[in-house]
Each structure stands twice: as C-alpha cells, then as structure tokens.
Length: 223
Image 1 (cartoon, rainbow, N blue to C red):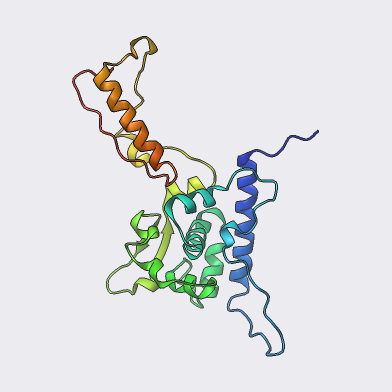
Image 2: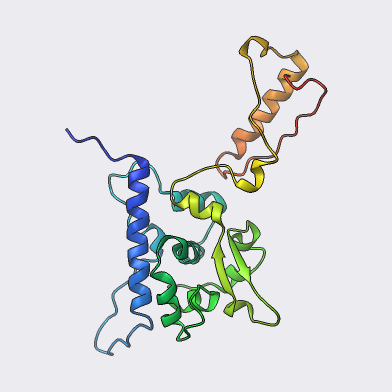
C-alpha cells in the first residue's frame, strides 16, 4: 500500500501547479477578444489555491497564510506573482513581454490589475495586508507611479510558501533558545496564574494566527 503524500509533497505539487497556471496567464496576456457568439469560460478566481487536491488533508502554505492574514483572492494572486520571480526563472521574461517593455522584467501592480480576475484597487493601500504586513517590497524611485514600481516578495514569505517555516534571519540575532530544566519548572502560584492568563489569550487568538506578545521580565532567567 502506497503511503499518502506528506504535507510538504502536497504543498510542492500545489505550488508547482499554481506557478504553471500563472505562466500560462502571462503567456496568453493580453487575452484575445472573445467573439460575441461565444461565452468565455469561467476562470478560477484564485490561481494560488486553484489546484488543491481532493485528498489533501491540510491546507497549503498559501492557504494558511491567506487565512491567517485575511488576504483576498486578488491579494493572494499578487503575492504569488511576486514570489514566482524567485521560484521560476521564466517569469521575468514573461513579465517584460506582458508589459511590452524589456526593462519591466518584474511584477507591478499595473500588471496584476490587468492580469488577474476581479482586481481590487484597495490591495495597493498601505493599510491592506500586502503592505501592512510587508509581504511584498516596493521599489519606487523618485516620482515613479506606485502602479509602475517593481514589486518583490519578502524572502521569509517566499520560503514559507515553499514550506520552509524557519525563523526570519532578521530576528535571528535578537532571539536565542532558552535552556530549560523540567526539574526547576515549578512556579509560584502568582506566576502560574499569569501563565494561565497568557495561555488563555493565545488560545483565543489562535484562529487568527496573530498571537499577542508576552514580555517576560525579571532577575531570574530560569523562571
């Protein structure tokens, strides 16, 4: 009996399928005009999650990220387009061709707004998830319009979409593992009460994936 594929294998396949459909969209852009007597086929709303396998038991990395941060279908597609630059060497050439400019071999909001179904202008806002959580980086020199500026997915996010959930290197120098001994794990009643409060608040926030920060201070590192 063949063992079911691991989550990493499923995620890799789903990401590969999403990248393949993205390449096809770019290759076919701009879309040809549909004759009046023909009905255009209904396209999948979100490329990033359009190839989920029926047997998959767990959501893909893109789905997890989208659910936790509240990304709209259009925002997921923008993020996929930006991440694809790091995952597929053909995307840069296709971006330049789609924008009819060999110098624009990178994703832009203008390209995304024209490329994907149901585009949303509010996705460009710094208050929306893509920019608020810094999932993408914008290179906007001088007076260049925002819509024409180069977009780039954050390296930590690209790794996450590949299934590599590792500590951000920008935090590596600021945090370190805590040596903990179970023999010294007993806490005073007052401290145990605070622990329960922290755990309760984390559990209440678990659905959003955004856990409140708990700052522990004191002279005794072990406790």
